Length: 79
Image (tube, rainbow, N blue to C red; front, side, top):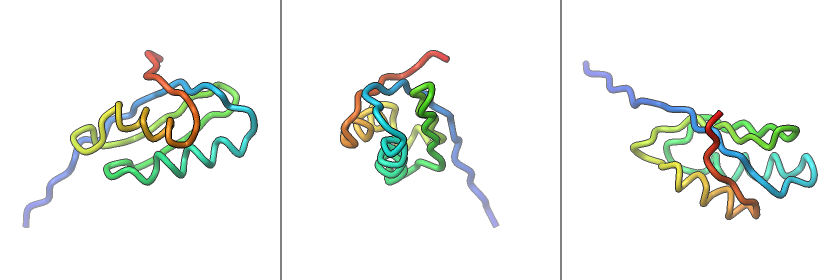
């Protein structure tokens, strides 16, 4: 039996336009629908979006586009 594991990476985005905590669930739902995404956490206070995903399936550009579809602007963060 062969088991393959896909490499998962954590990408951190900075989002703009947060106005209420309900924005958190909107972004988590939209990004969480993408294939290859294992986990999404949105930090309202710091406007951070932390995504665990398989980069071979879902790119950072895909994540940014999903946040945009939720109605917010995001860009990759260096920390």
